[in-house]
Image: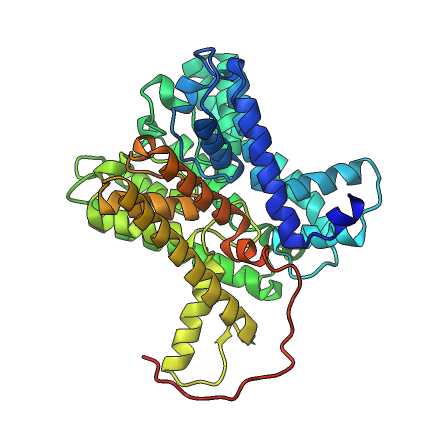
Length: 446
């Protein structure tokens, strides 16, 4: 058994670990006292919810507050926390506390889990991940409690603050606002500066990546010393947040947000841009969005957050690498350059593969679902891109999905969390080296 365990590759180990986490969560959510009705939830629905929570997505087949008891809600938030930070990170941190030796294999798993550039300093990075998460989530919970405690009472307000802080930081998208009206998310707070700013800050901090945290902690405000990845992440994050907000405003200024105050329009536009980067909350009715805004949201969901973070998607750096590659081809330059550095060719190959696999998975599942049941094209594509990007936004068709369709969406959420490329690599345990190359022959492209 020991030999069998060690024969697993790093990607296989992580993929199996998430699968075990999902199955444990499914079992706990099927317990009778996890549901308010006192009856066990169907396996397929419990599996879907556990997958959504573990893969920090936020798609639900039942309203979180209406369906689950305090125990069920606690299970969900624990799955979000473990799935967001990664069970490898939490396991290594526990070993550090217990003063156990962190072997080379554990360090390698941690490097793979966080997308770290090197194995050196991985233990220090683990400490910063867990401690940083506790600090940010704690601050978020405290600030949100100032709003929730006066509305819901002390203990319930504190729990609401903790739940939504963890869910936002881990880009989970689960909420407990169903007591007002099921599936409303944060629509009641669309004009609330405190709730909006805190949730957006947590989403962005959790989504920029642990490597960026570490780099900023080490170099503080000395931007010139930042790693290339940190510079690219901060640049693309800023462009996506403010560029997405501006486009959303243009698309909805005469429609969904036309009757809002100026502050409401600003907050709604910013929040809609930020949450589409794999968070899953919404302050306006997603179903009421114009087709242009739905398309914009799908693009943002597909891109997602940053490598080694709580977010999903193909990642901002992947899109930037491809855009730079296109630019270098158009300019007929010999290398791909940014911030005075040259990117390696392997990064371009990996970026192309990730985008192709994610796009193929999303479109294939959307086609399969439409073949199974008659659903609108836009809504089905929106659901598929939301799942593969581990976002959790929906136009409302999640509850209408048949069991087979729910399994397909759950599969997309799983692939989106562990990484579609990692999922593909999980089936190839050993790297195959080609010793003999075939003859070259040209073909026309484009």
